[in-house]
Every structure is written in C-alpha cells, then in structure tokens.
Amino acid sequence: MLAIDLSLCDHLSQDVFCLHESKFEEERMVAGWLTNYSQ
Image 1 (cartoon, helix red, strand yellow):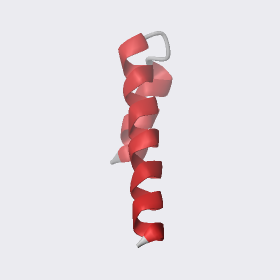
Image 2 (cartoon, rainbow, N blue to C red):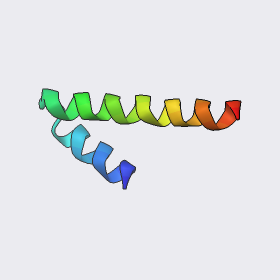
Image 3 (cartoon, rainbow, N blue to C red):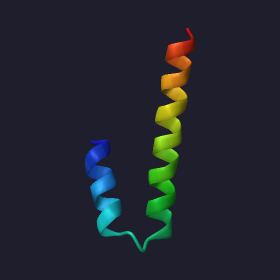
Image 4 (cartoon, helix red, strand yellow):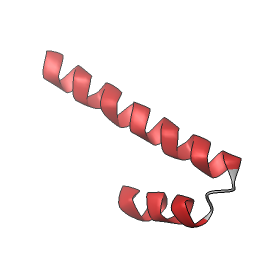
C-alpha cells in the first residue's frame, strides 16, 4: 500500500502536499523501526 502511495506521489511530484505526506510516512516508519529495535 505504501509503495502505491509513493508511486502516486511520484506522478504528482508538483503537489507539495503529496511530497509532504511522503516525507511524513518515511519519518513515521523510521520512528517505528527505532522503537521496535530499542525494545
């Protein structure tokens, strides 16, 4: 699902909100990985 969302953002690369959403998803995923790793 995330891959599909990122593909849509690639096609809409001029959409600032879409790019912001992509960045937010990446940061959220990284935060989740760090949380899981530290437990």
